[in-house]
Image 1 (cartoon, rainbow, N blue to C red):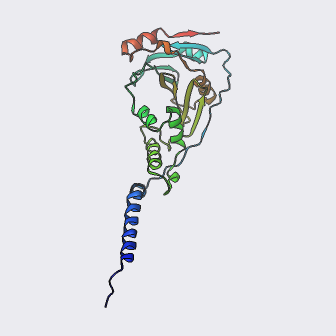
Image 2 (spheres, one colour):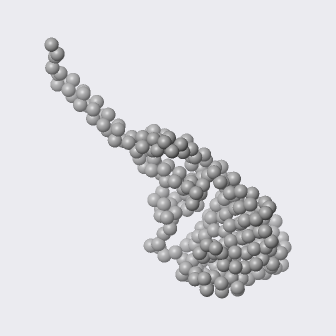
Image 3 (cartoon, rainbow, N blue to C red):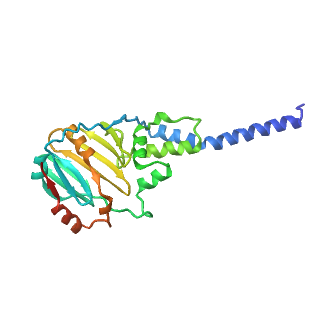
Amino acid sequence: MRRRATKQQIAVSIGILVAVAAAGFWWAPHIHWVYTLSRQDVKIAPVAVKELKASGATDGWAKCRIGPLSFQLPADFAENAGRELGKSPGTVTLTEGDLELTLFIPFRVPADQKTVLMAMADELHMSMHEMIVAAYRSSTDDFRWTMSRDELLRHQKLLSLSQPNFFPHDRSVAVETESDGAKESVLIMNAAEVAMLQWKTGAANGYLSFAHKKGKLNLETVRNVCHSLACDESKLGNPWTKKDLQKILDGMEVTTP
């Protein structure tokens, strides 16, 4: 004849059930995350991030200015490059031979208007620069069952930036970063023929990209151009119309030694 459970046994059983239920609730997002990665066979490797070191070999280069942006370019390129509005909104493109340089011309972004990336950086309590660097350094191997829910959410958000329309790891050959206290920038080299600099300084942010149609980029030149970039925030205004962009492009200043 089966004995009735004692009060102590019932209490222990209830305690075990509560513990199992609590553990299931706590690790539910962890289990779902691992299951999703496994089912979709997702494996994201980290990308090494190095310091951007410009050689400073810019003797004989031209000093250029377009709207609020100033930068240096090899004199021949600056003087002979064709100038046109870029394919993407807010950009201008300089082309000489097979080399193409595209610059996003920054404007003053109202405090209540933020891009998806700016909003995500705020949620992660990071600057845009810090978030991009952290995203490249993140991998699926960073996951730990001991992560708190907040840590897991941070992990997931950083890995979400590896999507093709953001900062894909599988296309990145090298990532270099530079910060001087005023300007923060990340140089992303996706191939020997393509490179992009994401930068932010004060109220301004933007990018410039390099593309060589038939050969390899001179990375020393790329780094020196990136290092020379500066933004005059006093010249920031409302978003540029095509007419505005054409005007400042036509008035591009080129000063040679």
